[in-house]
Length: 252
Image (cartoon, rainbow, N blue to C red):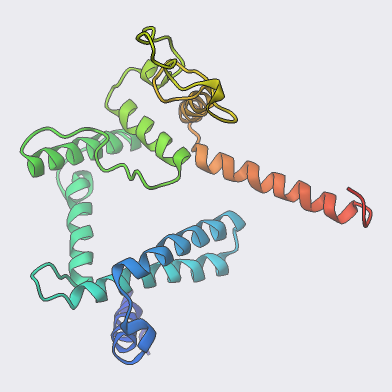
């Protein structure tokens, strides 16, 4: 018997989702809003599985993330106000985007390496934003502001640097003009709370500026600060757990 074509089981997943949406009381009442926490949770669980390196766990968690995509598309397909879409529309959108942003694969563009691919991607994306808005958009457009702060800082810096923004813009600890009489020092007051201080930018503490600078250092070294911090957190967890195993009962 011939092996099923790649993607055949995805069609079965769509059928299973249709059945669940129709016959399961819990699945039938879900909305985009009610499903949102699961999309975030499953994404973090997939990241944890990737950290662990267990292929079986990674496969399972990727399946959970895939379910969220199919579920949201199924919810959207039920709308009758002209804003609905199907899982095929979702697939069509990403196929079109990938094809358009890889002219060196699907067109006649020649590239010298991975960096030129990235440069072309950014240029095409900027042109898309400009066409959609009728005017040039910010290079920072599309950076999700709801992601963890360290990831957000790194993403903003990567986008800005690829656009040629001066690296010193990431230095938030530089001097600024003196505050007007009666105004608090820019960057907050040391009395504002634990860990606060005065940086060179209004509303940014010294610690905040230092964390932002560390994200810039990581980027300059070719590292992702979020992943580096996750790695450090795992190492700390392992140390604490090792200490727990060797500590005497009742000791502090």
